[in-house]
Length: 103
View: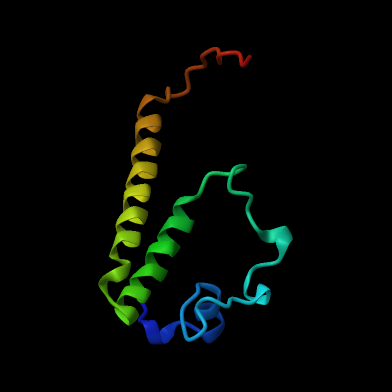
């Protein structure tokens, strides 16, 4: 895992750390076409892992006030992994079943 010193300056600004935390410029955000619409797509395991990494660096650099964020991210990650494993447990091995119709 990297340390807080390893975060490039532009990434510090995009995650809202550094000197001007309340004044993030629009240029720090990804282009509009690359932004994920939160209600259209579920968050991925990779996104949660990256967020945990970033928050852990913030905790190292700025203290324990950010632990609740890491706790929440870890809970979300555990829930996602649990759902994935529970669904895969019930998948049939090559047997075809009729899918339910959607209304």
